[in-house]
Picture 1 (cartoon, rainbow, N blue to C red):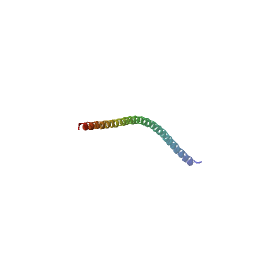
Picture 2 (cartoon, rainbow, N blue to C red; picture 1 turned 90 degrees about the vertical axis):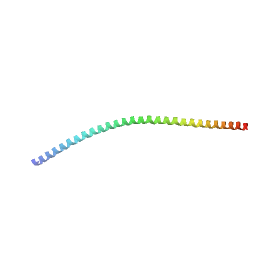
Picture 3 (cartoon, helix red, strand yellow; picture 1 turned 135 degrees about the vertical axis):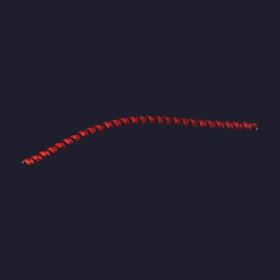
Picture 4 (cartoon, rainbow, N blue to C red; picture 1 turned 120 degrees about the vertical axis):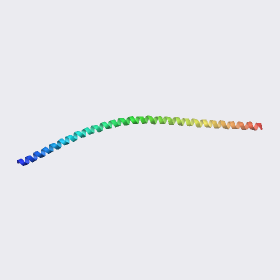
Length: 102
């Protein structure tokens, strides 16, 4: 091999060494990026778990309130029926008293 070819190969080797160095740098950056993504994913998951637990609690409070309202409405309807029945009995008695008076 002549000196010119040897010099060309040395130049190519130098460029390949430079490319290898750049790829090593890129690999290191990707590893750091993967670590950052994993950490952010874990952080986001913890935050979501806290938010979800808060929502679960809020939904349970709403469900309990809805159940209490439903019971109150049922009691009011039952009370309304009793009032209507009592009112009807009073009307019957009033009619009977008016009939006796006449």
